[in-house]
Length: 236
Image (cartoon, rainbow, N blue to C red; front, top):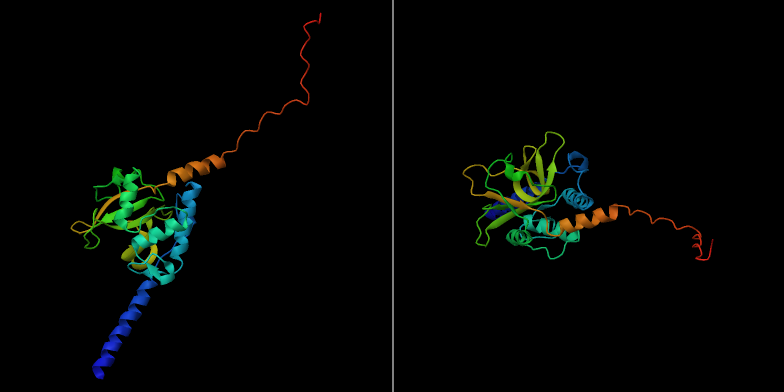
């Protein structure tokens, strides 16, 4: 009996710890992002949706792409976000998303271990971020993690991203769940590796269409009420 209650106590402790971890998320306001106002409307709308999810206290739940389950995993979070924003045919797994973006011709490969590298010059808010080696898995390509780039913070200029994780950091603290995180590259010797970034397939077309709608067309020149009569060939 004593051992039963001991096991029960351990399970209760573990469950309590998991619930606490699920609530350890971070969120920001769009006004905290230095370059938010400069982004095209479709990108701003996507970031708005992402930040709304960070305010729902969603934990990290492996295998879930549904916030109604109380949490989601990394690729499930991005899959849910993009589908909710109207993107079609969004893959479920991180490696499938990488292939999706690669076939659209947009992946920028990164070999550097420093965010100051020129390789990040083309990184834009709304881009997908990809890692390999974050956990052991047998898949091809071996991409294991995906997040969404949000931009730089006004305060300090740190790069931040959105997604789901259990342990990545924001503002010096470990976070667990659907959250805002600092964009940090793996430390030397780590098994994980940041492999590149890409625009969301279909986003460029959305931006183009939004720009066309936003540009007012010039009004047609007003026609005179009555055109002057053409001179007669018999006139003197």
